Image 1 (cartoon, helix red, strand yellow):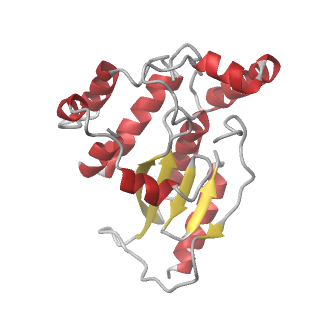
Image 2 (cartoon, rainbow, N blue to C red):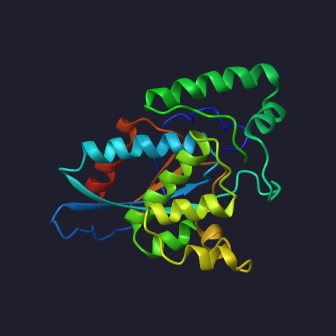
Length: 231
């Protein structure tokens, strides 16, 4: 998130918009359905942390709820060059050498807590995947996060993107990447990102919002509140 890319925001829950009545949705299994819209940038480490913690919360709540997670774009650095910028150079310029070392140490510790190794050697389609199923979209987001943060790959490279898309079974990725006129859906970007200042940002059942790399228990509390509110 801008200015706080390497710090967790204080847990908070807030309703979106004016109070309203809403019919609660049920899935095919009969369990209550929790829909989660996530605004995210694949170069934000806390977005990866937030995704992993969200998945832990979903796993611990799967006996109560079914989930549908949808990903939406957000640009932390819209002026970044297309050829990319080295992560270490970007963070040193942004935070200074002393704070940079502290931040990288902290981020490495957080990633190891998730069973991952944080890599700083890399350089700074998801909508298409969503049209083919949110399970595939989630798998693609996870693959790109791993590519960028744990494998030092430049996810602006066409071949890296194609490999990730093929690995999770996304069709039409090559055609999309060959057409320079196709890019981020500006309407979707405006709808889900215009009212927020940083990522990750989670909206649960169109009512409750969370920001930052929240721990699993915060997500679980939000699930319960959303379910109770829609009962």
